[in-house]
Length: 209
Image 1 (cartoon, rainbow, N blue to C red):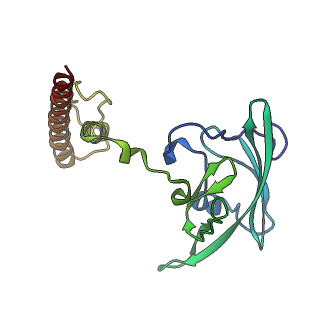
Image 2: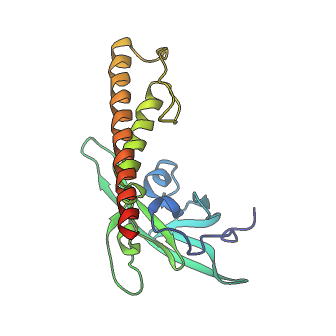
């Protein structure tokens, strides 16, 4: 690990989804007391972004990191992100970042997460990012739901594999039966979506012939 701000950060490539971008998370940083004034350290963002130096003051969260500007060249980024705290209904408060805007366009949007770009960290709307699930077709969505249902009853991610008949110890019998039926139904919908996709693709190939 190098000095603060010396780590490699995201270079700007890849699909435009939040899952593919390094991020800073106000909830997590607040829970770990990193947003308290006077605190400082290194934040390791998930994904390609490595050591991001940070310090906090009354002005907000100061970030220091590097990005790849071009082949063989890097540039240092210094950014201050405003932080606001909103009281919760049942007590306590929740922290949000305030997006400064991208390309000279002001934003001011409160956000729990900001995502990496070659010029700093900005909100999802400024960067035009979508969630991976928004890029899924009917088959992808059905398969993901089926996998989720299988995992809840102790099965594996393979939609075509047999469902487990042995109830996990931490799941009640009635709940296991309900989850088992849900997993079966999810598998049926996934199979139907796969067939529909295959028929659609076959029809498209025939039209092009």
